[in-house]
Image (spheres, rainbow, N blue to C red):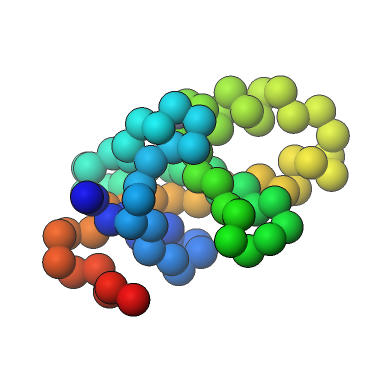
Length: 85
Ligand SMILES: [Zn+2]
């Protein structure tokens, strides 16, 4: 299972995949734009790939809702180099 670093959240995502299409993020070393949605509870955080995030954002109508979504950047970590809790 590929791990990803979410750069701005300073968080490692080990079950990397989009919550909408379940597609994985890019394995390219430069990483890929991703979106993070927190719904209040810290344990309930969703991640979306670039194309799903674009789709979601195109349907968000209120500014208050828009603020709940954060763009981030997912960078693949080499196997064995991510900290295991
Ligand atoms: Zn997706």
